[in-house]
Image (cartoon, rainbow, N blue to C red; front, side, top):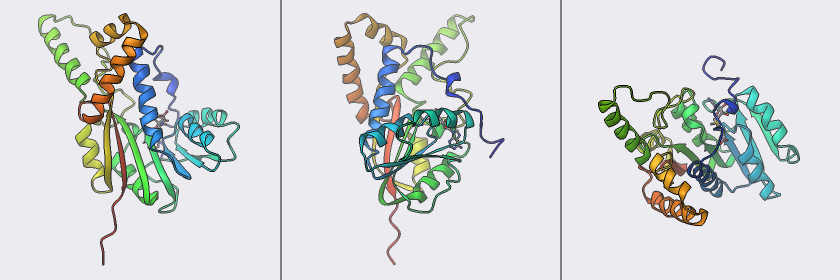
Length: 260
Ligand SMILES: C[S@@+](CC[C@H](N)C(=O)[O-])C[C@H]1O[C@@H](n2cnc3c(N)ncnc32)[C@H](O)[C@@H]1O
């Protein structure tokens, strides 16, 4: 596992210093949309990080048991502190998504939020998620869309600016894959990877135009209620436009075995 996985990965290095209004809204909505679908008696979170989501799910219902899989020793240490108080019903396991240490059909819900683009073999991970979810259970995967409307506009405006100003500012842009991501995900990549292993029941988008500087400066100038109204409006539109939205959330189940 060492060599393929960064066992010292630390979210401190990627968490933004501050959360502009659009980013804060996106992160909140991504979590809501993912966790709303994650209700079940036995819930697995793959690449659970600090296990914040799993803690929330377990705290909400006294008969839910959560299991978090995580290969980073740093994140596992943080998660251990985080789950204090619910650790009788929340178990942390050192492992990787590509080879889950569980029996077939063990879980009611398998959740993977904002992590699949970090996995060295995401399709093997999807196959494993399909294996460990029970028949009638659900797999929920949410991931950033690097072909969102925001990313497309960002690239387009940047290339025009670069054409006219050869000294255009460089550095990491929000539409570029961060160094700790392995795979560039978008709507088509996600659907293609799921198809052999899972039957997608719903696929929705979350938020539009996050990270776009004009959109952000408009939101920052408006009174809070008005900016929230606009964020909600675009989020509603994003639901129906997952290929252009900032985050894609897929809910899927195992393929039915063929009738003999
Ligand atoms: C961006 S974090 C997301 C954490 C959490 N799901 C959340 O939403 O806060 C991605 C996580 O995936 C983990 N990860 C990376 N490669 C992995 C792999 N092959 N199998 C399982 N988890 C992995 C990282 O250690 C990291 O904690």
